[in-house]
Image (cartoon, rainbow, N blue to C red; front, side):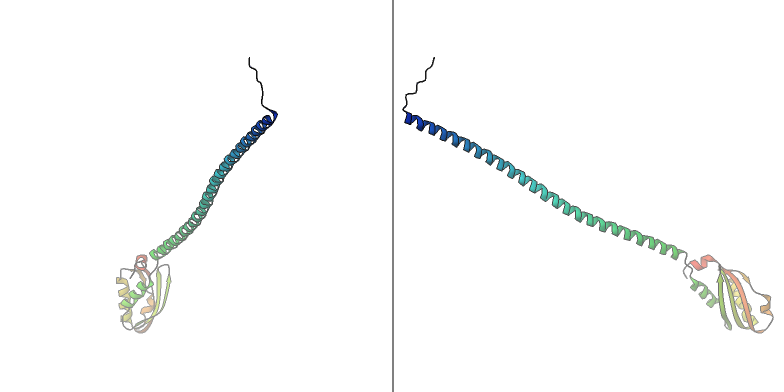
Length: 186
């Protein structure tokens, strides 16, 4: 059995109680300050992490906007290239099927003899109609023969009325020109 006997005088008891209360209050205050410091450190860490993530998110948003702008530019460039390629293909198709009438005009210049003048030239579906004047029938016949001998010309038709007079003949000739001769460059 234990018996506790307090033989301290009352004043020392009061001092001991005050010291005990003072230490208890100091311990409780220190514990509270440590907890507050712990919470401040945790909240500061959370703040740093969140600010880092917010900065990363804003940077990624800015880079995404830049990427999006670049993607829009790329798409616009691709559309422009597509339209340019389409136009180029159309031009190439036109050039492949383009008629070079200079071939016909060069042919007529080469085959027309001295003294024959061409007055009118009409075309319809590779059929060429010429009207003109010749000084003599021989000049007209040599022009007709030259047309018939040309490889690009076929189906030369001359009305018989062209051959009635000897001099100053008004004539009309109709012939077909091969398509390949008009498409190929001269």
